[in-house]
Length: 179
Length: 190
Image (cartoon, rainbow over the protein chains, first blue to last red):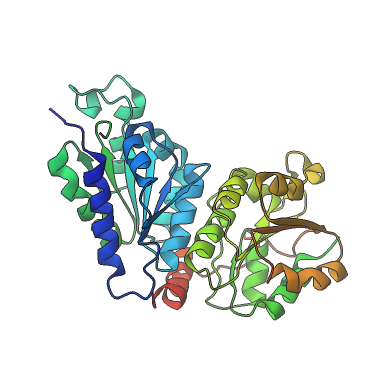
């Protein structure tokens, strides 16, 4: 059965990624950027991020904006993570295709699976928003993994690295609401 | 009405080390006027130049970033006005080439046409300063301030149609190549 992941573990993973990216770099402030369109599923992470002085959180109007802002930051050499929900993934498909895929821009996404049932695999969910997220990522050949418990936090740096290595999008889906 | 190409020539002469983000009908003309590796053109993702410029401006605070937006393009991602105002990058100049039509797809009128006041929208969203410019002489006079004043600034430029569009111009440098070249230039040293 999937378990909820504490926000502190997720934020520590973000910081480790950013520290690794910043090693030896002249610019250290902010340590890294979180570009978000608020996601109910990850609200405990967003609340905790508000208290993090070393990270800069930018809230965007739409996921289209979030993708383009993240691309601009990447181009200037800044480390960035995008936090959205599955409905935002659907809303921004053309921008992900046009910017991250066609532009060969590594963008790493944390995508909340709001309404995912604890006792069901997402493919069997009665909610279309949950059911179609992974198949949609598959259509675009976007590597993805599911955060199903504290042990899966290791997937965050792994899929961040994947986005860098393949120069394109990669995603971790947040299976249950974060704690 | 100002000619977009004349505006772009003035910018090319004054931009210094600014990063430029042309979109749609300004993209082919800019390629001819300023064929360099400090620009990245936005074609094919339905708006996005404004938010891309915002990311560039936040990531490169020591450089001016100039977005050459279109009215049809900005309408597709109008919320970016609030995103930009919220993040408030001081080095962002947002130039809105307003011709009232979707030139690339056949010059169909944009919703509201020339009646839409993007300067008022940007001001209401929280931009630090906004302007509406109708003559080349006025643009030339204001340009030094547009490139140095604290942003985010939006200048709504009333223009005619560009000489070419992404559909009628020849092939351009692929987007990923423009991204790679700009990344190497401004992101490599960080």
